[in-house]
Structures are given as structure tokens and as C-alpha cells.
Amino acid sequence: MGTVRAGFVLQMRFYRRYPDLLVPLLTAPLYGGIFAMIMRYNGRTDLVGAVSLTPFYMSLWWFALFSGGWIIQTDRWEGTLEYLVSAPADFAAVVFGRVGATMLSGVAAFAETWLFARYVLRGDVAVRHWGVFAGSFALTLFAMAATALLMAATFVLARNAVTFSNSASFPFYVLSGILVPIALLPGWLQPLSEAVFLSWSADLLRASIATGPVPHPVRGMVMIALLGTCALAAGYTVLRRILGQVRRTGELGLR
Amino acid sequence: MNLLLIIRRAFWLGARDYTAIFTWKTWLTNWFVRVVAQVSFFALIGRMLGDPGQTQFLLVGNAVLLAAMVGMYAVNMVSWERNAGTLPLLAAGPTHPAVVLTARGSYLILDGTLSASGALLVTAHLFGMPLPWPRAAIVIALIAVVAASAYCFGILAGSLLLGFRSIQTIVTNVGLVTLMTLCGVNVPLDFYPEPMRWVASVLPLTNGLVAVRLAVTGQWQAALFPAAWEALVGIGWLTLCLLMVTALVRRGRRHGTLDYAS
Image (cartoon, rainbow over all chains, first blue to last red; front, side, top):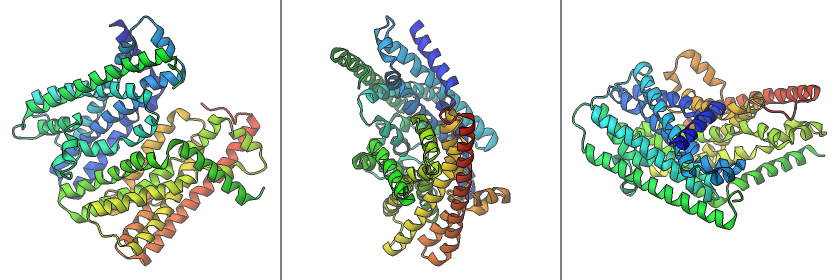
């Protein structure tokens, strides 16, 4: 537990030293403003609340991709990975602690987005189904951290991880239906959306602020938990395999 | 050395740097998929609203924004030179460093034009927006003007931020979303209050986007005036950039701080 805490504190120090890691917290209100402006211009003030929460998911994905995803690779570039792996503390616990700090930035992103939507954009974002909201929010943070762990592990092996991270934002935003419901996507894309935890999460968040009953809340939460668990298992397996392999071949800091 | 030769070599040097990041294959399968998705993300709002006119407005605005976005990546160009330790060498050379700096990143104009034009053509097809070829050629030329204008703005911003490396990512990202907010990308310029419209008129993208919207509907003659304004805005930012780089190099020479960055 002490190792996890140390990883957490280390990542928080990174945030303080490199504020550019928190750039989504600055762009989120601007995106919220853009989406709200489009709705107001088109006379759809009823949609301002739902669309102005979209930047939360954009920030969350950004943190998973750039902040969590690059945790191991940056250690490798800095030449500190060898020390971390050879230390008595569990390496996976350090990574988990650091990824946990990115979850905290996700909480900050939600608080900021919600407050901006409620008090600046004047959107109707009152939570009407607290159980669904709290459950889906906690599961979303877990799934995000698990996805960040998977990315952190796979980015070490991928030669074009930089190009992937720069390119993996909007394709996932479209697939996840974080702004526009998945039903409006072409039919051949919709099955792919179901494999992205954000799509289930966005549906539940939208439903938790809407009037009327939430359709299939349990199924949505089970899917977020399932996809998060799959990402966690895959991330842990890949991480162990990579470490074993590079230790054997002596390529820990070389790839 | 002949000035044109220097510009050509600097351009190819920058282009070679770029090919170290992207091959044609990764450009098409990663970057191009991203830009098409970015335009689709916004165009889908129009579909959600059930308004084909709005879909076209958002599609064109966000496609042209890509040209400005790539051009704005020039913010990082100047600091890359400093990080690589080549800025003092450029300052010591007989050619003005601004010539090399502006030419070296000019591949971004080409990339921005290609990204924006390609995304526009693909998403226009996906969303059923008519864009016949002779008209499309004029649109692509106008997009190139936007990319160049934004590039000039980006390289000036990069020079201004040279001593503040830790906030460059912040400025680039916030700057891009600000262009998206102010320049008539998602709502018409009339929607903004007068002071905001005035600010938007001297930013890259605003006038060029007006020209593209006119050209898309076949009014290419009416598009000439805003296109000329976009070019003038770009020239204005380029002039400021040359002055800024000159002052920067002069100060760096005097204080011996050219190769230091915060």
C-alpha cells in the first residue's frame, strides 16, 4: 500500500512540475462553451445540459491516453525504469499508484465540467438518478485507470505509440457517442461502440441527468465493469510479459 | 548561399523530420482517420439536430479548422531548434535565422492543406454534401491560404513563447480551441458580440473560412475578397514574426542566452 501511495504522490508531483499534463482542464470549458453555443444558436436549449458535459469524457480519455499511457515509456526515456524494476518495491504497484493519480484528475475534470455547465452555461445538469450516477461514475474511473494501465504497458512495445496517442482522440469520441448518440452512427460502426467503455458510461451519465426512468442501468454498469476488468487483466498480463521479456533479453532501457 | 536554395533545403529538412514521425502508411491509418473523425464528430451534431444545412456548416468549418490546427503546430518549431542546440548556430550563420526557421516548418502548410482538403472531401462524401471537382479545386487553394496564414501566426507564437517551454503545450491546445470558438467554425460570426468579431477578424482562419464557405456554394468570385484578407492577415503575422525573431536573436547574442530555455 505504501508503494501505491508513493506512486500516487510521485504522479501528483509531476502534475505540479509539468502543468501542461493538465491541459484538458483548460480546454474543457472552451469545448463546453462551443457545444452549448451550437445548441443555443439552433434553438435547442434543452440539449445544452447534456452536451456541455461531453468535455468531461474528452478530458478523461486525454488523461488515460497521454498522462496514464506514457507512464512507463517516459521512465524508459529518462533512464529511471531500470531502478524502478530492480527496486524491492513491486513495479506494478508503482504504476498502479501513478495511474490512480490520473483518476483523481478525472474527478477534477468532472467537477470543473459540471460546475461550468451548471453556473456558466446555465445547462440543466441536475443529477436526477443518484444511484445510477454514482455507480456509473465510480466504474468509469476504474475502467479509465485500467485502460490507462493497458496503454502504459502496450506503448512500451509499440513503435508508433506517439502517432497512435496523437490520433486516438476523435475516433474514440465518435465511437463512444459522448456527444451524439450511437444510434446516429452508421450501422457498421455501432457494434464497435459497444466495445468501448465510454459509450456505456456516456449513456448512463446522460440518463442520470434526464427526467424519466434510466433504460437498462444494470446492463450498462455491468458492461463498464466488464470492459474495465478485461483492460485491467490485459494490462497486467502485458506488463508482466514485457518485463519478463526485456529482463531476459537485457533490453529494458533500449527499446 | 542563394536564398531560395536555403529555403528549399530548410523545407526538405523539416519534411525529413516529419517523415521520421509519420510514414505514408501511419499518416493514412492514424492521422487521417483522426482528422476525418474530428470533422465527423462535429458534423454529426447537425445530423442530431436534423438540419442538413447545419451539418454542412459544421462539416466545412471543422474541416477548414484542420488547416489552421496543423499550421499552428509551428508553435513548437522554434523551441525544437533551441532544444536541439541549433539556434545559436543559426544565429551565427550568414543567413537571417528567421528565413531558416520559417522555411523549415513550412511543410506544415502542405500537411495542413492535405489534411483539411482530404478530410473535407471524404466527409462531404460520407454526409452527402455536393462538392464537384472544379469547385473543390478552388476550395483546396483557399484552404492552403488558411494553412499558410495560421502557420505564420503559429511561428510568431512560438517565438514569443521561446522562454516558456513548460506552457507551450498549454498555449498550443488552448489557442486551437480558441480559434475553434471565435473564428466562425461552429456558429456564424454574426452570433458573436462586436468586440469578439473584431478580434476574430485579425486571427488566422476567420476570413479564409468565410471564403471557403462562399466557394463551396459556388460563389467563388465573392470569395476573393475574404481570401485576400486572410492572406493579408497572414502577411501581417509573418512581418511581426520576422521582427520578433530579429529582436530575439539580437537579445540572445547580447546576453549570451540563445541556447537557454526555461
